[in-house]
Length: 379
Image (cartoon, rainbow, N blue to C red):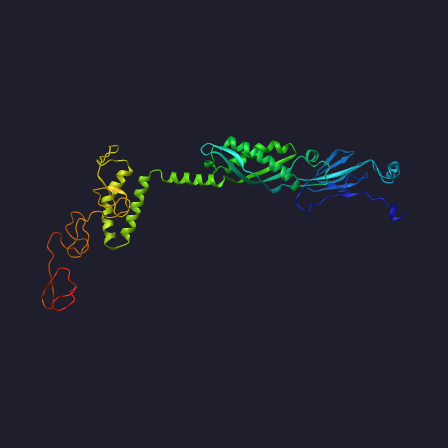
C-alpha cells in the first residue's frame, strides 16, 4: 500500500507562544474529522473541551487522553461518499488556558460624575490593573468565545474594562463621601470593588483574581480647590501664624549680629509673654477669657501693620519701636532699666569721661579715636 493511502491518527496539542490566548481551537480552520483513537495531550495549565456533533460532550484535565468519535479509520472514507467525501461527523477541541493573566488595564475613557459632599458635583478619572483566570472552561467557551478560533485578552479586555468602570461608579458613590478622604483608602476601595465584580466575572466562567486602583484624579480646578482647602487648614488662626512669623524674623535678626540683632535678642524676652498670652486666648490682665481692654494703635514704620502704641517691638516684623537709651560711650541701644552697657560695661547715667591722650595728656571729647593735639591713636 502506498504512503498516500496510509491513514494516521491525530496527536492534538497546543502551545501558547503569545502569552495572550485564553482559548485556542484545533483544527484552527474549523471543525474536522477527528478520528476514533486520536490522542489529546493537555498540559497542567490547560483544559481540553471536545465538541462533537456541535455540542460540548466532554472536558479533559492534564494528561494524555484517547478520543472516541464515530470517524473510524478506513470506513470513514466509505461513509463520507454521499457528502462529497466530507464526513458529517465533525469534531473540534478547544484548549482553555488556565494560567492567571496579569496586568490587564482598566480606566475611565471619560470622567465619571461623582457628587462630593463638600465640593458638589465633580468629575473623576480612575485607572488601575486587574488579573483574570478561566475557572469554568466550558461556560467560558459557550458564553464568550463561541465559534472563534482564537480568543485573546485583547478580545475581552475592552468589555471587562467597561464592566469594571460601571461598577466602580456605583461603588464610589456608595462608599466615598468626599475626595478629601481618598488618601489611604485605595486598598479598601479596591477590595470592595473586587468583591462587587465577582459575580459579573463568574457569570462568564472567569475569576477576578486581583484588582487594583492605581489612581483617582479630579480635574485641575478641583485639585486647586483641594490645595486651597489644605492651605486654609494649615493656617486656621491667622494671628498665631503672624506671631510665628514674627518669632522667626526676630530669631534670624538676633543671629545676624550687630546692634540691631542684639537689640532684637533682648526684646524677644519682653515680647514672648505677650505673644504666648495672645496665643492662649488671655487678655491684658493675664486671665484667660477676660475681655481685652481697648488700646491705642499705631502703624509700624517698617511693615505698616497696626500695633499697640506702647509696643517696644513690632509683633509682626520685630522692628524696634522705642529706643530707651544709648550708651554715651559706644552708642549701644540700652534695654529698659539697664545699669550697665551690655557691650562696653560702662555705668549708665554717668557723664562720659573725656579721652586723655597718653602721650601729651591732652583732654579729648568722649569717643575720640585720635588726639586732637598730637594725633596719637587713642583706641
